[in-house]
Length: 419
Ligand SMILES: *Cc1c(COP(=O)(O)O)cnc(C)c1O
Ligand SMILES: [Zn+2]
Image 1 (tube, rainbow, N blue to C red):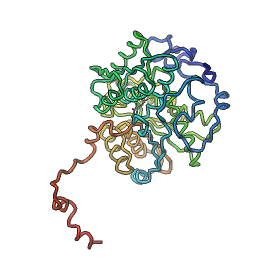
Image 2 (cartoon, helix red, strand yellow):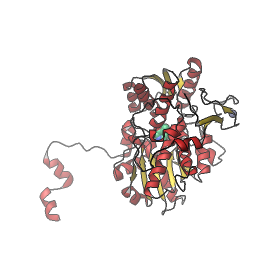
Image 3 (cartoon, helix red, strand yellow):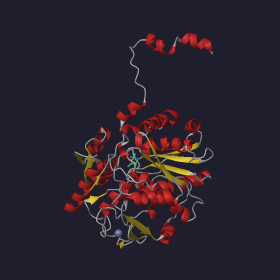
Image 4 (cartoon, rainbow, N blue to C red):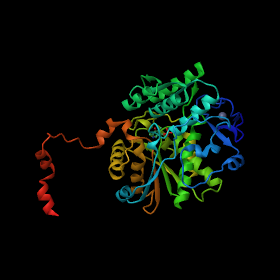
């Protein structure tokens, strides 16, 4: 039953410590939900248990099980999440004028980065003997949790804003979850899910308040560290889009752990990218006075008005020597098209947002052209085909007749003699 490598849950505001074996979501010393807890580890124990080759061969995130906050006797509920490719992107690099690599997390089992966290959530809920699991989500966390709940044999009840993209609502239904589409924003769906958790005692996977969720997201940092080690080069920048801010915080924590343990010699600067219409983390990080709480962007996965993990996200930006920028929806759509057409990687808007952020940072001199940048595509594009249509030209409808093709591309014989 031991979880000796996890020493405490520590409040990010007041430092009060809690027992990691109890299901505690946030620090009780504060009125609102902002007393987010941080999982603390004994790294001597982790290092002693971590007997793997950092050879770049990563079948799933469970390669890093010694780092994960699960009990020794817990049985992982997994679909082989993580272990995603770090692609060279020569065409995209040419387009943008900087060396870019793509960490393609849209290839996770449910098409989204969040599978890393859902695997941990369901593993822990199951180990704790819970049989109902819940979360609020802009779409992807719900779809992801539903898939893992099905895999683990748990009931899943999810709260999403009523206007989530159709693909993201179909997915959890197929996985057998109860999908409760709340007439309201993500922020309202979120508050309801927290109230319901208090009332019914369901296991809540909400990334920001459940301290263990960020911990699964660390594995993308572990993987990049390992993959960088094999490549022989630590990137200068590691770029994520930000909604609640859990993803970038987890990624940084993971990379920094490998650095602190001397598995890699350097760390990247974290770049967080938000949509102009949902920029609360960016505004807080840059000390803007008017932090707008209304979320307005077509990148639904990052349409968060009141990010729950501002403290951890800002800490990641600051500790790593990084920064944040915002981009417009138009720039996000352009980036989605660019990533697809230059490298064959189809991301949903939030997954392509880092590419838009890199372009902006190059223009503003935040990223230098001789630096190396890793952008993370956090979600697969087929989840949201509607927004993609705004970024692309239309399908060309033609009659089933050769002359129609000739109208478009000219006469085949004439073309052959041209060369
Ligand atoms: C959830 C999500 C994000 C943002 O992650 P946060 O932890 O909320 O900052 C980015 N991209 C995609 C595709 C997501 O689903
Ligand atoms: Zn506290």
